[in-house]
Length: 301
Image: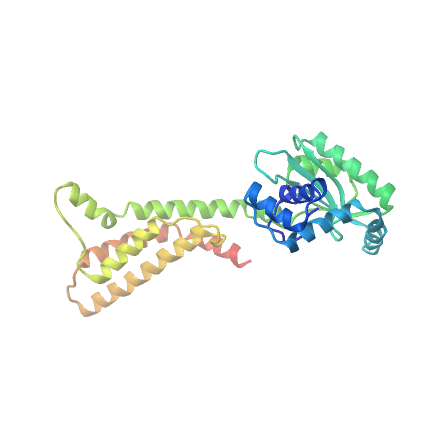
């Protein structure tokens, strides 16, 4: 078990407990040891939370209190979670009650096969029956096929659902693939635009070219930035849709500019560039319009 909303993983919690009880260290000594040995900064309050959880887990006197809470809830809402605290280490397979966070079984598994998962579920079921004396009212788990099969065999009559993270991961698999295609094709289109590459093409021929109208320069620079659009950690779910939306904004600007040109019926600088960009972007947007329409419906839901 570990304190909720903690930034430290299972290995850090285990090490704090080890330093405390094996070395008989004070809080100050734990802070110093964690920073000196592992470069980990941790304060006294977090150490206290970690050690309190450890004490609760090791003390039988807290058990009746947990059992009473579980009984009031009508039974155990079994939560099954496979975690890999540190890359390269064996995964930690944990089974606990969702409401009280009481750990029922926890084991490092070499593989998350059907047989291994089933073994842990059978042990958990036995403990719930014999030590808690309550029923399992529901199960929350990951989306691993072997895990779902094991749950079905060990708890055949118990309602089972996936956790939010894995549920949405499965539900959004197809839309995310569609969004990824839209993003890839939009960037590819932009990178192939003639006027975005004209300066380089002319340079290879020993000539020079650049736009003269400030509006055109800004449009070309913005399109160049969009052609290098990358996904960042805090980006919205549909990044391709966002990129396409920005491209559509540029098209609307070009469209407004062309309307002004047609209305005034006079030549302006870079007219050929503006009309060329407008034509190509319009063609691309119309060819891909089904993609954003479908993604917008999903995002709206």
